[in-house]
Amino acid sequence: MGTSARTRATTDGHPGSRYRRAARRHDPGTGARQSALWRMRTTVRDEPGSLAALCTALSALGVDILSLQTHPLSEGTVDEFLLRAPAGLTPAELTRAVAGAGGAHSWLERADAHDLVDAPTRMLGLATRTALDSAELPLALRQLLGRCTIHSVPARSLTGQPLADEVPAEGVLEEHTMTFRDPSGGSLTIERPHLPFTPTEFARVRALVELDTRLGQRVPPRREVLTLPEGNAITVRRAGTDDLAAARAMHERCSERTLAQRYHGPVGDADRYLGHLLSPRFGRTLAVETASGRLVALGHLLWDGDETEVALLVEDAWQQRGIGAELLRRLVAMAAETGCESVYAITQASNTGMVTAMRGLGLPLDYQIEEGTLVITARPSGVPAHREDRTALRLRDGSRHG
Image 1 (cartoon, rainbow, N blue to C red):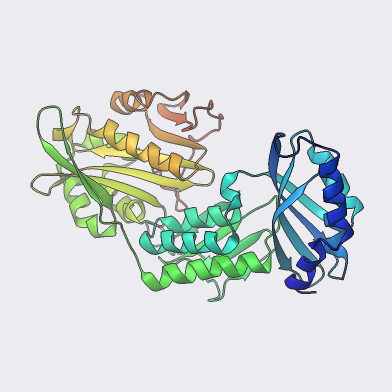
Image 2 (spheres, rainbow, N blue to C red):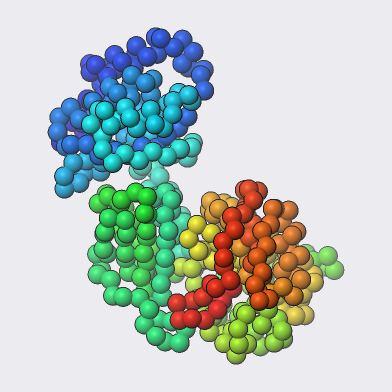
């Protein structure tokens, strides 16, 4: 049964509408009462009347259906609803009513005003964001799919060893996993253990990945000039792989102590990390330039599942001027804008500059320390950070980073 036929079951001529009107008649305060938004998915048989039964059950509870998407499967159909329900209606009552109307494998999650945007408009917005900035692809996918984990695995490790398996050009869809060729090389894997992916979602994700591939690497050209307290002008801008040479030159001007505090490993390996760190596929990088165009600082925001790592490197001659704190503030603001739940920094207990910068955010902080390695975690929302061991974070080839 097609979408149009299924949607017609909700017209005023159907008993479901009578239930809705009856529910409103018995609740004179309907227009003003408190309500809650819910996203719900349920699987029904692909046969006439299946959607009508769901609408009837929901209407009897005083629930309004604000939007509906259908995801056809080989057997049955997944109906995805955006619902406005009375605030006093519990999730158990909702799912019980849906199950009684023939819905199976139901899933329910609180929604917000952003979910009121219709699917075509949302896809156009995500495509625009992806087209303007290579770093937006992972974020756009999260906006599209909801809570999920995205892994971008390089084709080769820092030592040249193969990391990513060959992925078919059309991608691979499994129940809770989607895998595509990463436009920057390697593979892009998306996981959502709590909710199976549908073929419709797979097609939408593939369209965004193909768009990103066709456009190539893109970094927004925006630049902002700031004046330091002593009067020096600096420029803050986004950085990418085009800045590799300038970043290596900055490494050469940094002391061994500064590089060791940043990379937590052999100083001679520092240059090898730059290709990964500057790639927009793994996050966003901010660069600081002097008036002469010399690169003197880098700040990285690195996607890590539901969390985000921040890392800073400021050339020795430009330290203790507030540059690191300014970069950190901007990076955490970026993380908050993208909906990241928490931000963490891996540093050494002796790195007082990084500790001071994190404290300067004015957010609740969580500290973990083991064998001289300090992990400081903050939540942009201000909610106390969840404790999780991050002292063993490593690249796939075994090298430390952070």
